Image (cartoon, rainbow, N blue to C red):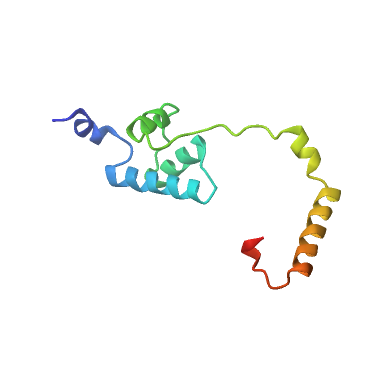
Length: 110
């Protein structure tokens, strides 16, 4: 008997539950709302009623290498400074000029 199959009864989630969780994590990432470790552990609590330990997520990721976690970086101060009322107003003025100059152009072609 394979080790994975032998220890399946000790896991918090069953195989179908894990597959569903992996699919949900992938879906959330695809719609640009990736889940962090704590959100994943909270989902497991919702599914099973058991809050997994801190090391559970690492073993889960070993079983599902298609899942990757990353830490978000800080916003570059120069980028934050450029996101201001003046620059945003200028952008929308340019966009309006394009719409006025080419009224029949579809928005997806701009």
